[in-house]
Every structure is written in C-alpha cells, then in structure tokens.
Length: 307
Image (tube, rainbow, N blue to C red; front, side, top):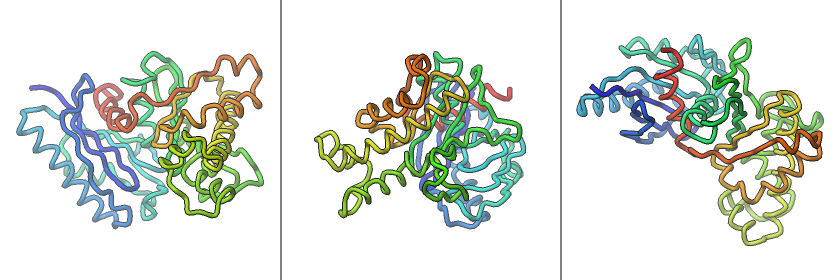
C-alpha cells in the first residue's frame, strides 16, 4: 500500500486539510471553516469530522496512513502537544489538543506552530531546499516565524522560539495584543498596512491586494504605505541578521505576494541597520510554495521528523 500523511494547517479563518505522499504530492486537498469562536469541544468535533473525511479518502484509494501532522497558530509546546494561547482562538488556554485527538486517532500525531510547519515545508520542497540555515516569516494579519538551523526547526529551550512578529523595533511604538509595544507585526503585517493607510488617507482601507495593484500603477498613497511597510520589515530583518547571523530569509504568507512593491524599501531598511559586509551577504526571497507550505510541512514532520 502507498504510504501517506494526513496534514491539517489550522488558520484563523480556514483549516486546510490534505493527504500527501512521500514525494510531497498532494493527493487530496480541501478547505473548511475553522470556527474561531467555537468552544473547544465543538472545535474538536469539527476536527474529527475533517479527519474522518481524509481517512475515508485514504480507505477508498487503499492508502496507508502513517500519521497526522498539525500546524497550529499560537504559542505551542510541540513536545507536549499543548497550545498555551492563540491569537485567533481566544478560548484556547493550555489546550491539550493532541491528547484530545489521540483518544480517537489510531496513528501518531505530530504537532507544532503553524509558521514552523510552513518553514519545514519550504525546507523540504521550496526555496529552502538548497539552504542549510534560513529564517522564515509569514506576513499576514500578524507575523509568524520559523528558524531553520542545520535543516531542523530551532524550538528554543521551552519550544517557543520563532515568535518573530514580537521583535521590538520601537520601544515607544504601537501597543500590541501580546502586552508589549512596538512589535514588528504592528508595522509589517496586515494591521501595519491598515495603520499606515489611516495615516495617509481618509478613504476606507482597500485591502492588501488592491493596495498592491494601486502601487503597481504608481498611486502615491499606496506607494507610501508600502514604503513604510518595507522599511519596518527591513529593520526587523536586519536585527535578526545581527543577532543570528543567518543570511537567507524566506517570506511567506499572503502579503509576501506583494514583494515587488516593498522590496526596495525593505532593502533600504536593512542596509541602514547592518554592517555593509552583512548587508551584501543577505538574501531575501518570497516563498516558493506559497499557501501549500504549511500542509507540506505538516506532512514532512510525519514522514521524517520523528521516525
């Protein structure tokens, strides 16, 4: 029988579910509402239904399931399978999601932060395939991150490493839901774009895709917003380079697809805060896998991480 992994990439709005083979081919894929306001009990019931749909597909195609890989937003202890808190699921407090699932799931479950999973996907089949070390950032509503060292995710002492969105770039800056001030994600994310737009225009925020299209048409307000975004992101990336000495950075998440309109400002921000030798060595790439990175990283973990 052909061996496969089940992969669930859980987001604030949608859950991407997939069945993936050992070569990284996605044999089945479907999206479901994630129900961010559901109780934990209702959420788990929904998750079991999704997993059952994947298992039915595998049974029909005579596929052998080796395990389930989960990508979960929030502060995650991957070894214990606990989500301490999540920006999208306010009811998740010390949520032992893996243990709850394992009661009904007969195969192994491997779980980690969703950005770590996406970084693992890039390392397997994306832009990071040829890189031994790199930093991965997801640019979306906020900023997630994953640090890959020697082809492995760096978890830190307690499993919380990679919260790159909370790198402080302005100690007196904008308040952040984490309780701090001046975090990178308040400037170089969707919320950062919205705030920058309010400062340059009285019109309603057009959304990141429209903002990108306007910038491509040389709209002054849109260009200014992306300039602020890029400069802030560049400052954050320079700080990461100064601390970690990792020269390759991959940008994922929906907003990374506007790379062409913030790249110049980003590089200016990097150059202003790096030694020139370091700046010349730095390389920043948009994700190759885009929205597939998460589910492929979940599958990779099942196949190769804990075998």
